[in-house]
Length: 306
Image (cartoon, rainbow, N blue to C red; front, side):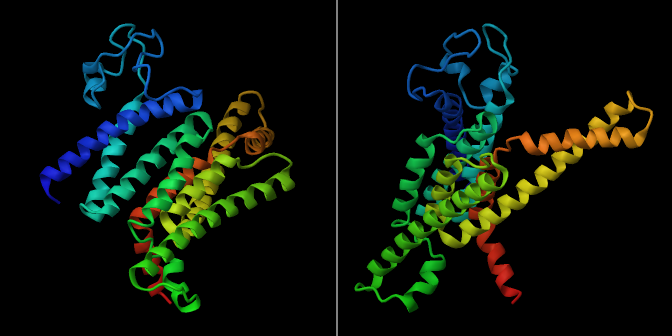
């Protein structure tokens, strides 16, 4: 990597991460991300430009508002650094190419959706819907080169040839990926609703996976869903076990019988399992980041085993 370009890429990532913090705070509230200027959410004092520098201002202020001394969430610092790191990873992986631009945009959208879902359990349309459109547009600038591009040429005879055929197949793969991702999540949510009688996944997750499919194509979309389901399941099991252990210890103070304490603790853990709404968009978005960086390498390795 060129040190100057790498440094500039990381710096731009920090700047975009700072803007992403504004989006995460305002979009769930239905507010404009452009105006008014940033202000402390506690004392409402507008933030001066020298207190709005990515990373540096948070460290200088030690995570507190200059005026009212209210704490500023470490999430602001985390998102700025993560955006910078992801932009840098895109440059390292794709070089200074159109693919670099595509996946920087994708990473920006995914980070915004991951943290918004984690905080509010919402996936704003103002991120997902433009993301779907951008994924389809980028399919004409950066070939998706996925399932459809590999198998359809021998199955479908297009009335065009050469570069136009490649663009058409890339567009088709993007559209099929969007449809496949959205359909799978919608079907899983509908099945969960019929089985449990409560909504398991909302339309935000459906639109998120349509965006992922538009950017990544069919194969990496399937990998994203599989990896997210596995990660979400492991997180759910770990949460239930942690609640069970903690509640068992609490009930041990009230019951001398260990068996009774474990039984009551397990009842509490089951309540968490039934009523806790896990922000699945966090896992879908995180695994989409993993897929566009490492997914092809993993699938190539897996294919070499057969």
